[in-house]
Length: 202
Ligand SMILES: Cc1cc2nc3c(=O)[nH]c(=O)nc-3n(C[C@H](O)[C@H](O)[C@H](O)COP(=O)(O)O)c2cc1C
Image 1 (cartoon, helix red, strand yellow):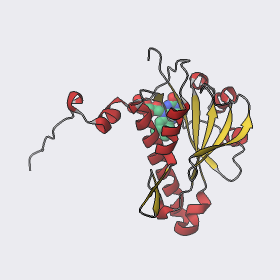
Image 2 (cartoon, rainbow, N blue to C red):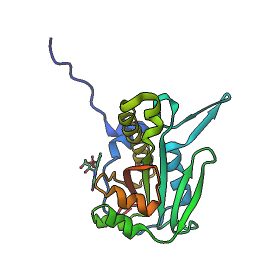
Image 3 (cartoon, rainbow, N blue to C red):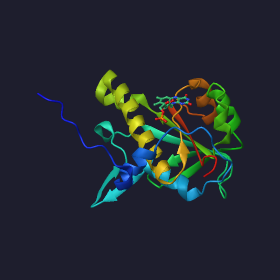
């Protein structure tokens, strides 16, 4: 059988979702431009937000067994009207629960093996997971489900960021214990660190 060549995307004719996928790339050259709270709100909603329709509830990302083992934590730095602090995203209320006041961006960058570009981001979202929650139903296999779900959440947030002309990058190189300490994570295990911000020249 012959190879079947498929039609390539023409970025000029792409729809909104295709454009976001096309434009998404890892950004590390963050500018000091502030980011609106509404922008953070949209990104968090895309990562773990709730959708309520016809009496049923679901989230913006799939979850094995609808168990939802992921939690999103925020470190704010350059969001006018939002105090610099650590926060926990509450999907049911679509709200931020303040955890600890202060500037944590530098210690967070240090915990990411001193990837200093993180310090220039406007805010950071840490995806954390409770592996036991999913393993109770699926056994050892549950662990991979939690990682898969973190991938769904991070990609949703990356694409919404791209759509809003914001840069982002997924960080996997970090000290688990240092991130857990900064955010007081308790039983939640840090899976991904995502700094967001406008890029130089945007
Ligand atoms: C699981 C994972 C971990 C990553 N960790 C880091 C990291 O610690 N630091 C970093 O600068 N980029 C990190 N990246 C981003 C990759 O370097 C980037 O996705 C890759 O170079 C491809 O470029 P693109 O995202 O622009 O397409 C990570 C990406 C993934 C998916």
